Image 1 (cartoon, rainbow, N blue to C red):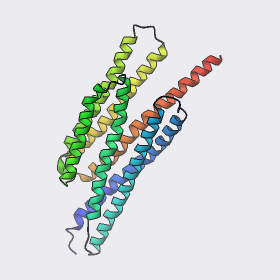
Image 2 (image 1 turned 120 degrees about the vertical axis):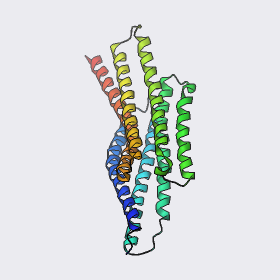
Image 3 (image 1 turned 90 degrees about the horizontal axis):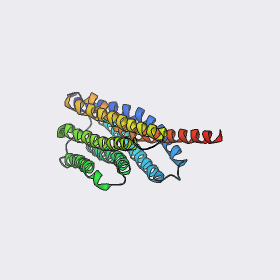
Image 4 (image 1 turned 180 degrees about the vertical axis):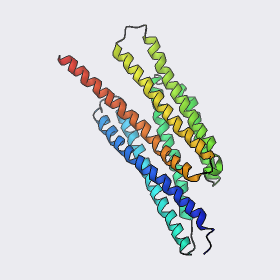
Length: 276
């Protein structure tokens, strides 16, 4: 038996299983956060923008679920290819390649959907000024263009220098984080000379901290992807891809849960204070 065709197929199988293993664990965490976010948002249906956030959460959950289904299908197909090679059968990797393409498309759509929440948050904080969104939107579409170019070239992410695409993702996140946190800092500074309550200042500080922390975590994860893509270790890169692909859903959903629980806590405190 000639082992030459089995080596690459076995490596691909290990990469797929490494990626799906990490993805499934984090997907379970994400599902818990998603259910909690829907529960919290459902209790605040009268608040402006809640329906939009609920729709966004459902879209993200649907994309994440389809991606997991593609991951599982890709793992099964990869195992089938290895089994056929071991059995000295002729293997056709067409389906595996198609699933890989679908995975890239879903990742790009998922990233766009996740960034849209940050874009909407920036839009609201800047008083619904659409011009402020031009720069981050350009970076978002540039990232999509790079992904489309990779698909049109019919090459894998490794072969198309993913560092460039990941660099654009980092820049997009930095721009959105800077615009959002900068606006909140300006609001806090301008209201410091006005007679505002300590509760407002406290909420403003928490919002700034949340924006900076979520932005830093996401940037760190993508930067790690950028670094691991430069190494000649496909399994390590696959693990980081699985980690980063789920983190793009976990971070914004966790933000919704945190803000929702914080608002619920404040409302309860206010009611208790009124009852005293």
